[in-house]
Image 1 (tube, rainbow, N blue to C red):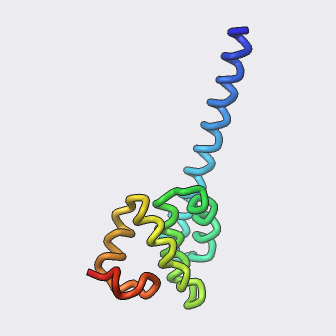
Image 2 (tube, helix red, strand yellow):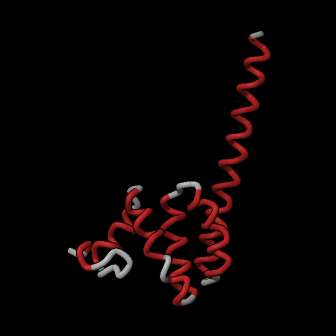
Length: 109
């Protein structure tokens, strides 16, 4: 009984390690695309992470959208706001220092 329990726990740990390393690899690949100004490719890497709740990926997804084109840039503010709510200091600073059309004038300092 104890061996079966330990086997199940080791499988759960192994699955989490694999998923976390994939997640980290996806974010790192997205950052490489950012450094190369490959915004569409970066968006593809950051979006799944952002949708899973990664505040850093939300911020960089917003940046990736902002730099692609006007239509996609319109949705960037939503990702910056979500990222700031989760404590990302870059997103907080971005929303504090600039007028954010997405949020309206009442959110400006």
